Image 1 (cartoon, helix red, strand yellow):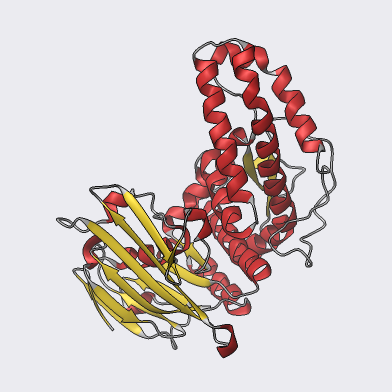
Image 2 (cartoon, rainbow, N blue to C red):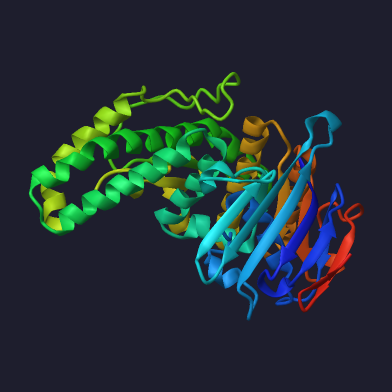
Length: 392
């Protein structure tokens, strides 16, 4: 699928504008602080209905306006596959978000996500590697909500049970008031853990190969680390082709994760009572990223250079694109927000070569000047932006 049309109303500083988007994409050129990133933010908002920069919805409304609205039309290069129209709006006074897909308002936001098939590359991605575990959990949660059937529902139900359980613990309520939340916590938390484990084990080899390709030969690896001990398991067997959207990796069997989680929950009861919150579960897990080989065990956060951390973040985004290709059977739309300005020459060239080799689709990128356009520099139409006004 490709984005063929985009219309905006009172979104950030972009005001009211509409564009026919070329099938190959575009390169948006303009000085900093004129709104380049805002345009990519609008496109990605239609994928997840949240800002990739962490802004609240009310912060996306243009100054002095009561609401914003974004609408995108996606078409397939294959005429018989048709297209999709996605629209999202948010009103300040009611704090209401409305999402419409092909003319029908969705009952739950989760029913409308994932139609764009976009991957966003941003200089801020370095926080995926350099920050704490919450950033990597968030990365997994978004990726799997978009690409693994049932994940978002399990995640939401887990969070609901966790919140209610933590309230009971903070209040110092007796075990009889805490234990009713154990069953939903275990059921949905185990499903979240299993899908995260499956994805990491399925794509670890690809992450490692991608990191090596961009770095020029240096190695890195990733591993899912639970807050409770899991049965020993071999490396991933890969994703089952007959079940797109379901990751099936060699590892703990369905049920073993739940048993291990339940055992850890029972053993942590005294710690929970003292601290007043649930101390084990997927809300405490991490994706560990190491340098060199697993035998060396070097934490990239602690021992990696800035270039190595950026390379790992790029590898995560590239593997995210690979997930879209395999699960959704389509080339991802690549959104690149002035990415090459943060990379040295060698990594830039190797990233370009890797992107040229991969089956990426439409490319929408930003750059402060024409000379900074590296990807598909000879084929992407040049758009300009000044004070939020886009000229095509």
